[in-house]
Image (cartoon, rainbow, N blue to C red; front, side, top):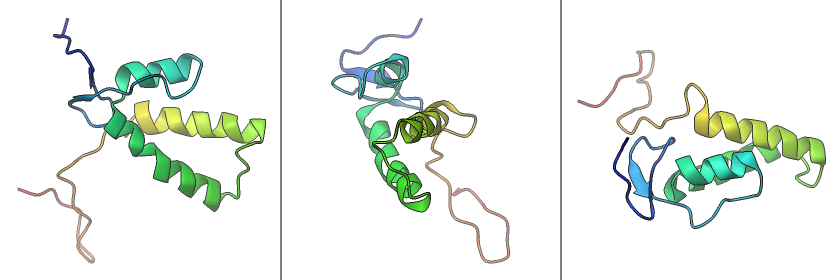
Length: 102
């Protein structure tokens, strides 16, 4: 079992210990899971992603089906296979493969 730090969480998005959210971002199991496993900083990364999804697909956040879709996308964003941010990542060079900073 890992050591606990009051007010801190091992962030699933950032891959490091960071300050926790003050409370679950919304009710329900996903909100509780985010509260327990995503830092406040990691959660802030969702907001621009959500805006992109809403604008790109012309979604109405008041629509129950949109809320279901956004929660599915949120779960993938925080806990999916490629969820963790790679801080050393650089954008690919023109015509060349992507590389990591040394």
